[in-house]
Image (tube, rainbow, N blue to C red):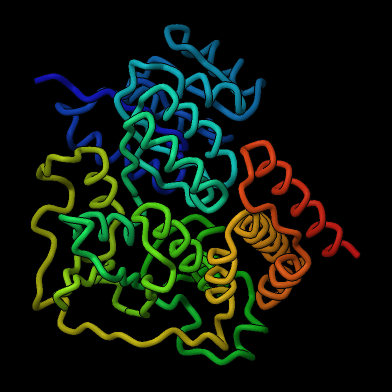
Length: 382
């Protein structure tokens, strides 16, 4: 049987590591062409030995030179240029984009331009430039398969897009679902990083605590499924068993369920349209799930969710501003420079002062991203 040739951008991160586990389980079905990592040299060494890729990309030239001396039979690249070179390799049939932040945008577009299907686990790509990315993917007849558990669930629930009236995105509610506004305002970094259901990277875990993550997912869903914002609803579901649902015009609601694990949505994207036995086969038990609770999100405690809706509806560079301001504020919180609540206040201030550009090109998006980040840093350091 012919193996599917894939590459993983961000192979040493949370999603990338689990993707490697999925591929290892299904080793007869996949061949890894390229891997990319940031600075985690020890983990990428292990992955090179395990998967024997043709190419590896790391963040710095120094680390690239170190790895090239150790692994003479592979091509070691570095930096943004290295990521784009991987994505220009037409030997790939699919590229899993699991890097975090704006760094994922240009490689994704490069892969699309080369007719390579995308398994997308990078929110910023669609939040910053969804209109451009989706349009180009359609022109190139490239599949974009979502890896986020919520968007994967929606993708699995949709048979005919014309049947769907509404998308229902579930949220765990994060570590502060039952806490007060004062608790949130006084939250420590350690408390905020203690997610009740998911083990994720620091940035996405902070976003989950403010519900900005869910707001970004709403923007992603708008682009992925061509759905108006008024027809995308967020509901808090603390068990994180229903990963999302769709409502049809006839009133039927179709949901995708599973105990919290990213292995299933990763495998779904990599094997699509097939479904294979994997790491989590036979893992679900309705009796163990026991009960499913749902509630409306508290928008007074979690105003970032409304802010994301606002930016998404406004369109243009508002979502670029939202994403950049939030990300820089999250980094500042992790560095102990601001409080958790100030993430919202700073992002709100940037949105309120933003001068929108309705139909930006990629260069404008990147410039607006840079400008917003500079403004946030200046505000924080005053």
